[in-house]
Length: 114
Image 1 (cartoon, helix red, strand yellow):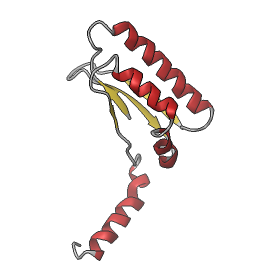
Image 2 (cartoon, rainbow, N blue to C red):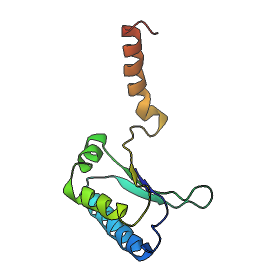
Image 3 (cartoon, helix red, strand yellow):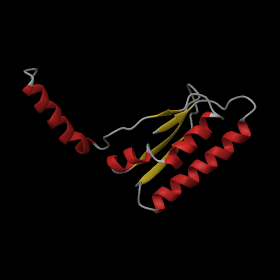
Image 4 (cartoon, rainbow, N blue to C red):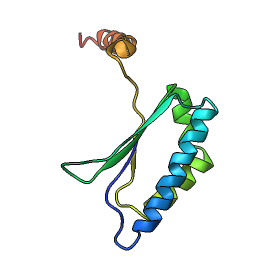
């Protein structure tokens, strides 16, 4: 998940250019089978915070964070928008996280917390 705040004043055109590059990069990742899907969310109310969500295999998503192309786009984004944030999340449908819950519960039992 990559999210960002408002454009830095005077850099709005750059923001649009970088966003277009990022969306092209995401399409390339999807075409290569490196991500499963992507969705772009634009805030309509509340804080000005837009979000690009990539979904796929956790290990593949984690690998993207260390790639030069991903880092280059983040650097470009930080020059044109405020408060760029990146987060890697595991989960999805409730059944998708059930195994992780079981592992966590096992660890809690190991430590006498459950």
